[in-house]
Image (cartoon, rainbow, N blue to C red):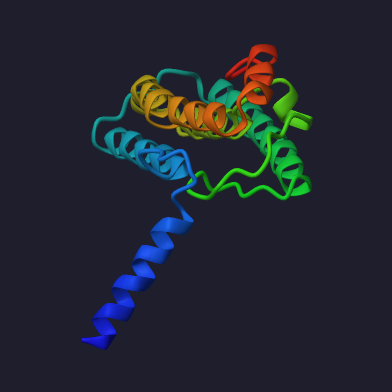
Length: 169
């Protein structure tokens, strides 16, 4: 009985500690990873190649390099601000430098470019077709929830940032 009570008390404490978060529907990298996996699986089952090989590889590499540069910039800015990257953890500041100066969501932008880069490298139309529904889910289930959370937490400071920097690019 004491063990169960301790377990429940610990779970309640953990929930209270993480209540200060936007309540996104899922861990965003898992959304991107799961969707690209489905696209690659569909490509194995129903192969559809839509670009010449050299163009697919070159454009895929450009997307991957762009993703790495944007993600690196965003992670540096967040590390300097001592911010957690995980959206399930509380946000302690509004980050506005580096990649955050041209995109309010540079990590999601970089995940999208990573996704596109992989889809192009594998020359899979299926993955690219799944990108639009994925973006709709990320937009509504992640980004809009984060924006509401940041507006409630930081008020006018976040509204000024939101008015001056675009959501994606």
